[in-house]
Image (tube, rainbow, N blue to C red; front, top):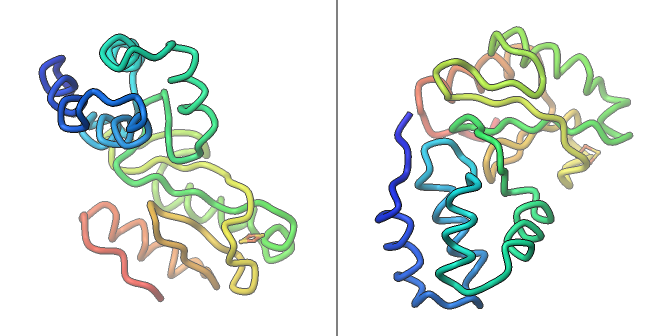
Length: 163
Ligand code: FES
C-alpha cells in the first residue's frame, strides 16, 4: 500500500490556500491520497499546524462525518445497512454473504487492502432493502449472486454497475 509523504500533504493544503475554511476538502484529499482510505494521526497533526486550527477540531470533523476514518480501510468500503427495515429484509444474511465472498469478517479489511466490511445505519434505500453502500453508490434487492458479483467487481477494480 502506498503511503503519504509530508510533502504530499503540504501540497494538498497549499492547493486550498492553507485556508481553515477548506478543512473538509483538505481532509478528503488527504484521505483519498493516503492509500489507506483514512486520515492518519501524523497528517491530522500536520494539517492542524498548517491550517492553524486546533487538533480537537480536526478530530471533531473526522469523527462526525461517516465518510472519514482515522483507521486504515480498504480501497472499497462496503457498508451494509442494519437499520430496522433492512434488518427485516435479511441484513444479517447479507452480511454473511459479504463475509463469505470477501473472506473476512465484519469490521475487517482484506490483506490486499481492497475491501473493508462495516455495518451502517439507513442509507436511504429502504424500499429496495436489503441495501449496501459501496463508496458513493447504493445497491439494493441484494441476493447472494449480486453480493458475489459486487465483491468480484471491487476486487478487479471495475466500475460498480447498478443492478
Ligand atoms: S433501512 Fe436500510 S436503507 Fe433504509
